[in-house]
Length: 93
Image (cartoon, rainbow, N blue to C red; front, side, top):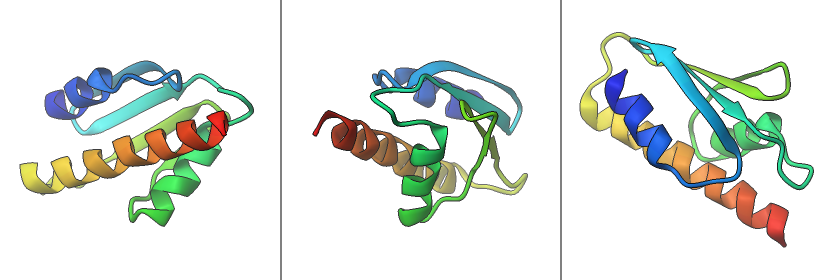
């Protein structure tokens, strides 16, 4: 959980408002940006191979398996960061 939260907090994006959680149950509050919401980020993550649940139009919940390896966690974090950057780029286009 600490690895997840530290890496998410390091992403510089107008989308990320707050990162919170305990253990492997985490959430990222998404600040709507140029009409793009948490839903748009979740759709892009799904295209890139990671499923997450958008809630209340501005929160994305993450619940990693208890048996996840650090390598797998970093792979998931790479997908999250890539997806956020793609949606941000598309919003600016």
